[in-house]
Structures are given as C-alpha cells and as structure tokens.
Length: 95
Image 1: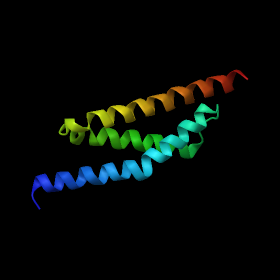
Image 2 (image 1 turned 45 degrees about the horizontal axis):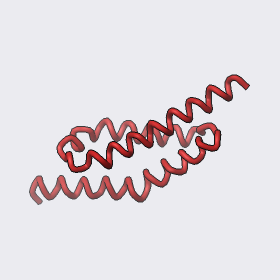
Image 3 (image 1 turned 30 degrees about the vertical axis):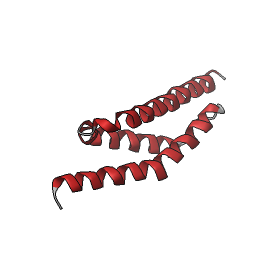
Image 4 (image 1 turned 180 degrees about the vertical axis):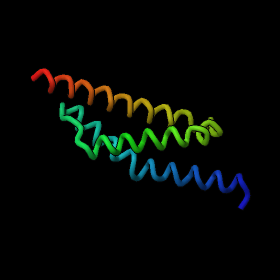
C-alpha cells in the first residue's frame, strides 16, 4: 500500500469514527448542557480524549484542506459545549 492510499484509509477511518461515535456523543453532551445540566466524569473524559486526539492529528488534518469546513464545524460544536458547560458550573457554584 502506498502512502497516499494509507493516508486516505486513515482519513476515512477517522471520519467514520467521527460520524458513528464522536459526533453522536458530542450532540448528546450538547443537549445535556443546553438543558442546564453539568458534565459528569464520563463526559469530561470524552472531551479530554477528543482534544488529545485532535492535537495529535492536527498535522494530518493540515495536509487535507478539503476537510477544513468539517473540522471548523466540529471545533465550533466543541466550543459551544465547553462554554455552556462552564456556564452551568458557574451557576451551580453560585447556588
């Protein structure tokens, strides 16, 4: 298998994982924080795993500018989740 085919296979696998695992879980967490709920340890671990993977894979994504729109949308989603989660934590601390 040449490098181009291997690279394509890795990208396809990562996008499939995002579609079938990461995105559904992120949307569930977003619904949770939008309801005013706080993150539990599983939610926090999931987000930490996503951020660690994203950092490690950044060089791979930079090689594929055709994915910038998808990546930008995901970054925005995770930003919304973390911002709302922080609001929920601050509100709970004041209660």
